[in-house]
Length: 290
Image 1 (cartoon, rainbow, N blue to C red):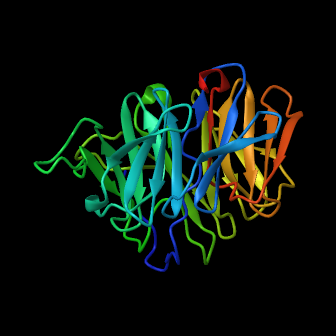
Image 2 (tube, rainbow, N blue to C red):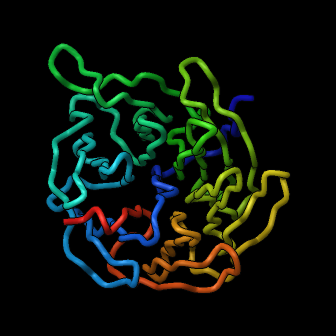
C-alpha cells in the first residue's frame, strides 16, 4: 500500500541519515560529515585526514561500486569520489533542482531523497540530457503528502530498492517503508511509529532491519518473521546506522559519537568522538585507500 500520514504531520526540515547500510570486508574506514567537509577515520576511531572539503552543505553520503558519493544540499549536486578522495566530478548537476538530502546505493543504482520534491528518486549514472547534465531520474516516488519526506535511506540489498523512514519533528511519529525503485510503483508502509519515536537511520542485515529511534534512545531490530526487539537501549539520540563485518555502527547525535557493536552479542567494539554530525556517515574499505 502507499505511504499515508495525517495532514497534521509537518516537518520543519528534512533530515536524512545514513545511506550506505552495508559494506563487505573485514574492517571499515568511517567517512563522517563535519561542517562542509568529509573526514576519514580508521575503524579504531583515529582521524586519518580530510576526505573531501569545500562542500555545499553536505547531507547525504554513501559508498557504492568502489566509489563514494556525496550529496550537497546547498548546490543541488552529487559528486563522485574515488577511494583516495579525488573528486571525479558531479554525477547529478546543480541544474537538477533535486536538492539531495540523503543517498543510498543498490545494484548499480544511485538513490537520492529530496526536500524539494518530497520523495526518493533513482538515477542511472550514465544518463545525461542534451546539455550533458545528469538531472532526470529514471524513477521517483513521493513519500506521502508532506512538506518534507524521508529521514533515513538505506539499500534493501537483494530485495532491490531502498528502505526509508519518515519522521515528523514536532510529534515524533513516523513510518518505516520500502520502495522498489520501479517507476509507477508506490512505496509500502512496513511499520508505523508512535508519538515521540523520531525514527532516523536504518541498516539492513539481509532481511533483518535495524531502525534508530532518536526519541527513546533505542535501536529497534525487526526480524524477517516480524518480531520486534529493542536491540540497544540507553543511547544518546541515535540517528545514523551502518553494518559492516558483523558490527552495527551507531551515530549518536547528543554525544557526537559513532560506536560499533557486535551483532552476535552486542559487545562494544569501538567509539569515535568528533565534532561532526553522526547522522551523516558511511563506511568504506580501508584496503582500497591510497
